[in-house]
Length: 188
Image 1 (cartoon, one colour):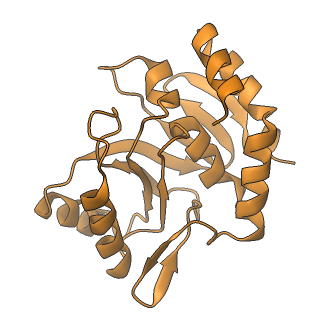
Image 2 (tube, helix red, strand yellow):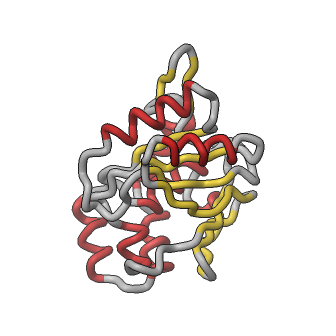
């Protein structure tokens, strides 16, 4: 996320206005273009297979793996567990959030297959910090309904913090009762 966008985020309190500005971001559109051309561009390579950074289908469950508050900046253990989960075919996608913020990463993850999300914020921090914290070392994970129980068991057995965010939708971008529009407004 570039410095101009960070400055605008600081100045504005309305999340919809911030999302609108983000929808016009050249940096985001370039990033989305890279992922659209190569969904494995920045991906988890686990064993013989790869796990893309993008969401695959409507109905998959979205989680954050690790500490998303920025208090713990070393996420190497989280990455190792995510790689193990990928190797065991427990996850559909994995996307590291660092230096982008959650909303930015969610939009990238939705862009390739033109999907959306419906998530719930964390009541312990502001919605703005939740969506735009660029010191976020967590990993955005999507899991199929069929593998969700096994995935959650696997994560808990490994002692890694996990947060249920919500689910992948057809195209609308929602958090709590706020709509940030549709993915088509963020991609060309």
